[in-house]
Picture (cartoon, rainbow, N blue to C red):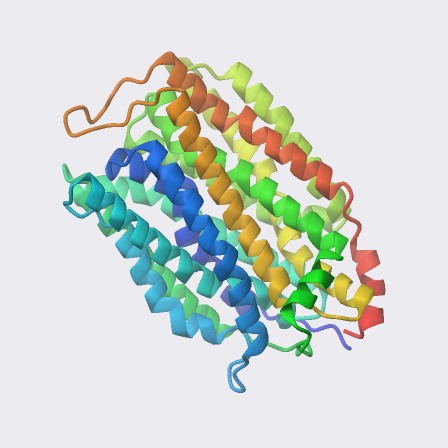
Length: 453
């Protein structure tokens, strides 16, 4: 089959979908834990339990959504794009409700948090599983897939930059003394933007490749999927990489506020520095992989994260003179962390093709659903680790009576460990897994020839 080129507009449209996704995922990485403790007023131990239990729902909803996308196809719009049209508005509403703080007693607030967090998680699944599957049907050209993923992740990081830079400042500006109201309005604006971006993605993309969907029973498909060693490596990579990434991202705002002693501007610019570095990592990854093996770049970057994290832990101290160094180190760390991202998201479709070539059975929906579940499981593990460590290091939760508590040296140590050394362990595990991954561009050509795409 002739390689299929994508227009710039379609790549932008494809990227806009991940920008929409990142309205939620970036708020989950960067803000949600801080929102629940310092704005909503929940206890870290209750947050940890909630996040853990909701991840159990993902164990069902993510594979189920993958099965649904395998089973149903619109003749007019394709297999994956219709979900952007159907769920874009419910998706936006769920984001707004999650960041709404009702004036309830503590038990009522906790119940409301459970309800809205489950809702936003289900809406996230409804659009994300089709979205991450879409790259496999846009084009059969691995270079075009990698290029489209570069656009995707660039726009994703732009959205994350908007969340990290704008939301804390907008919350202060819109809410004034009522910071909870400010977060509701700020994230409401982000939710509207996410809805519109999903609709733009629906209009501008086209599904070109039609894979024959297997009628094999799903239990049997799962058995074939487990036999796909390259997919299993990506599953472990997603779980470990996401866990490390979310631990670091979740405490960045705490690090800026308490470890560096910064106000809302410092909090937003520190998080924004990390996201800006991640944005620059996207085109850098595309340029480097034109001349350098993408698999080597992947695992080398994860080992590099470990080295940079150790240096940041040693060099940056909780004092004003270290603030500029903290920004520089966090920029470098975030750049190296994300340089592998375009490679990972194209690798999933290639691993599905690898399994097809190896077994003769194509398992697509479950494969993408499994990766999405691993991502959410990593988010859940990270949330449990962060909040458990907050309890262990005696983090003081703000209250109405004490809105800006002074944290102990023990709590500050916990915060800096969670930004540096603890996530570094997970990234090194990620690097060790990808060291065994073998689907390079050259190897993928043999897979394409075998399955005739």
